[in-house]
Length: 268
Image (cartoon, rainbow, N blue to C red; front, side, top):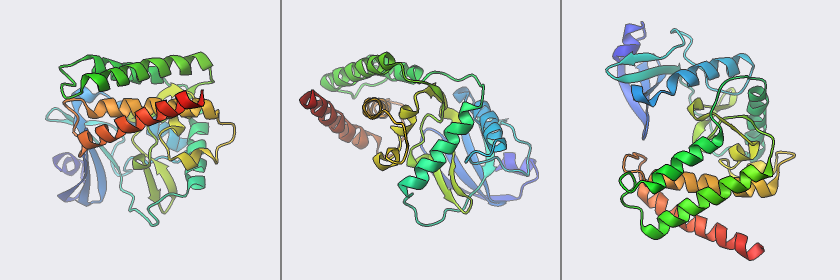
């Protein structure tokens, strides 16, 4: 609130919209979306620059608030970025065809950008390090630790060996990062951008979305889905993870991983 006020915005209230590994708030009455993270997070500047370039290219992304300078603000050990607040519109469930169209337009814009970004395998390695670090994942049972470690290792290798074309990706275009607005669907949370096959992004979306995307490698997509599930399951076991209900989700997802791997073995 102090940061926004110092920039000339009228603020006397803040409503928490999301409180997990990063805080998202709606500031009123100026109606600005504020995203707050520790300075050590180090991703805000990349997100701001990428959002500006993609918006300039006409891509379906959320934009920074036009009333203030488009940059990262630092205060008391935190970064603060100020974004346009988009009032949600109904229906809340996104039609798969619309979801696929928006994601394909985003990918088309990203293909035209030459920006440094980590490869998706960097995130896989981060998950593998968490699995191997018992101090960071103390509640993870040995059997589940082996399952996650083996899955992350084998699927990363299998996906690499396919040699599929790679490009700049959103990184986590799941429904929680898609806004339904009066201007259509918009993607947010670009801090997760990375390079990899488009199937890696599609693996985060509902299964019906891929059916509206031509040229998808179905076998690669299935491998990416299981890999992504193993990654997000690992993050939920991190002792520092703050996602609400994270441990319950982690246990549920372990069961889904086992079922998917059993199905693959039966098919082969």
